Length: 134
Image (tube, rainbow, N blue to C red; front, side, top):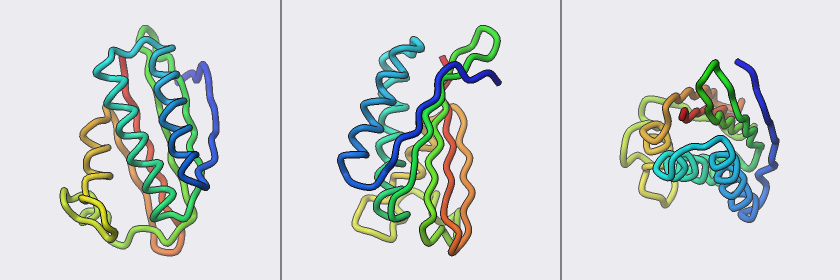
């Protein structure tokens, strides 16, 4: 699938989470996502960037504008080298948290995305890829 624009952003401090959110919004606007779809992808990006920082110890976000025939979309990849997730099924359950949050980050991001894929292994980190299509 052709990538028409890509940007990699570090996630090391809380200001980086804000930058990921802002850049996601700008790319969503640039590709013509509706206001509702912009809000969904920005909310998911914010949750996943925060998880990357808080649970993964920091990492990177790759933002890619996609063109698939007549369809345009945005794919976001969040990757860290943190402790990983022992039980993915449990981690994707609404209300489950290992921190102080509401336990809606991963499950919420999955609901807000057109496509959602997560890989994680204890001691190896976590990679979450989401997409939203116009």
